[in-house]
Image 1 (cartoon, rainbow, N blue to C red):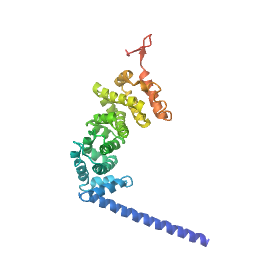
Image 2: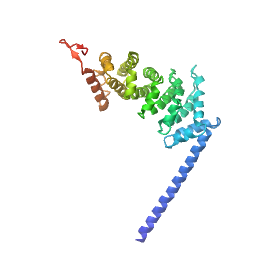
Image 3: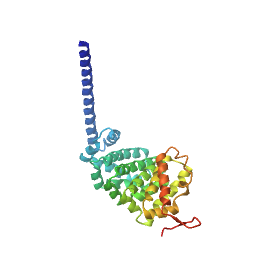
Image 4: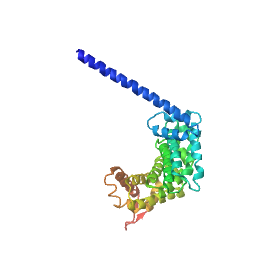
Length: 310
């Protein structure tokens, strides 16, 4: 009995000791966070602070409010972005410059994805500061990294499925910017850009906006068609998944559905992607539903030729 009590006391002491250590370390770590945030205000200490804070953005849940509400921090992050503009045209961006500004963008992504700071982030129109990066076309690694990280900020916004985000983005040029990257970017950039378009389409307001005019719909359909053709030559299951979901959502609109009956790529109707999708039941189900949506409501004459609905 005495031995059991003694063992329990030792265990209790060890647990309490570790609790004190963990709390102390957490407090020290938090003090470092405050120090790095303060160091963002000084050009001499900013670069290291950007690097250290970008490493901590996943492990400090309230980092976004800390950044947003600390004096001069957002201004310092925007200054990092604006400082890069002269290196965009002509395209002279170096790897060091790209890494530094992408650390600043990572912190802005943290602010964009946090529920306490997202609305203020949009109200300040901060995403517009990133659009010059999305306009770039240089295929060098520094520019590709810059575009991808900028897309990540927009992706973090749309991932929340909030109407406020979609309403804001529809007032900007994000759709044509995404379409251009979907056409000519790297596979990873194409994937994120297509994901953003998908999220816009999944919103009723976004779908109505894209299908409101023939020009908007045809631009989206043309780029998606080019992507399908490219994917038939260089398959990517992850990218194809987003493309198919975009097509399926477009088929929910009656006018778009009529147009898709004429312009849906043959590769989505035959077995071109059977091997790519053999283990992806979700995308196969979406593709089957897309084909079904386009077949419903069609009228055929005795020769089997589709006729437009009366």
